[in-house]
Amino acid sequence: MSEVKRYTLPEVPHLVHGRTNGSLTPLTLFWTAAGLELNVRGSELWVEFTADWDIHEPWYSFMVNGEFFSRRMAQKGTEHVCVFRGMDPEKVKNVRIFKDTQAMNADPESVLQINAVETDGEFLPVPERNLKIEFIGDSITSGEGDIGAKAETDWISMFFGAENNYAVMVSRALNADIRVSSQSGWGVCCGWNNDPNSAIPPIYGQLCGLLSGEKNIALGAKESYDFTKWQPNYVFINLGTNDCGAFSQPAWTDETTGETFQNRRTEDGKLNPEDEARFAHGATAFLKQLRGYYPNARLVWIYGMLGLELAPALQKAIDDYKAETGDTNAEFLSLTDDLKNRGCRDHPGVGAHRTAANELIAYIKKQNA
Image (cartoon, rainbow, N blue to C red; front, side, top):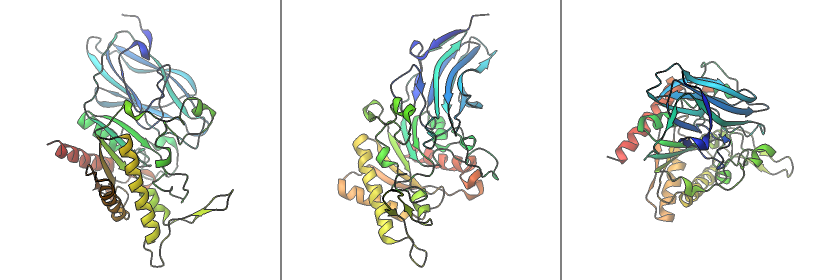
């Protein structure tokens, strides 16, 4: 039986999924579905992780030969975890290690890193994907509620899953390299509670700008990201659900300045036209921001997995963007609110994510027909 040997990531061929700080010693996994892909010829494979947290522990999963294999909660400190053992040593196994949980902005200590891999065999090259897709979103795109019993209501990292995420489903079906930039509760102009600091556009240009704390700052989370390193064919923006929810919430008040922010409703319960227009303007501005990063990608604003109330505003945002820029490589795409397949925390469950994934797969195939 061959000896199991330890290799750092620069020593083996691999493919990294997700934004990184450029370091492979260790590889820090910041966002949902960020991870490492390997081709291994050997009978066993181990991974060395380092993790830490104060409130929200990271979770991660293994996929072997394109199928979900196992899921674990990270342990504090350094641990060696077996991906597989006793398999045919002559067959090549494609392995993907990915982070299940989102970047936890409420926990400055939360971190998940891959230090090294160990095998009794050899590593073979992993070809880059021709199709590259970016997904930008909120709790839906973070996979909140797509795992766990429907009755669960706890807001904990255990109920976030990348495996059941529509973005990962699209990746598997189309053999695409994907990146996910998403945060539960956040929106275009404000979060679910009207907090304007919980908006994705202002932090999108940073590596993982929504994180805080000395540890994450040292890892480069606040640094400007170099978008030239990875250019997608498609960018799907699934934002607006929390902006919409904020129309039914009290005003947010800045405790320091006393300033307030609120998406309001009229007396008859409709969206306040001024606040709806402000949202549409913010969405148009974000499209312009994304075009600056991705000059050739098709920008597709997707919406509807948890209701369609802001769909008219998003269509207006797209129309305004096209009129102001002359760019026709952008559009709005409505997704199905699959009510019968809600998961825990009243979020889309695995069936609802599968419905959305199938709609996006059909869309992409039609675009490339």
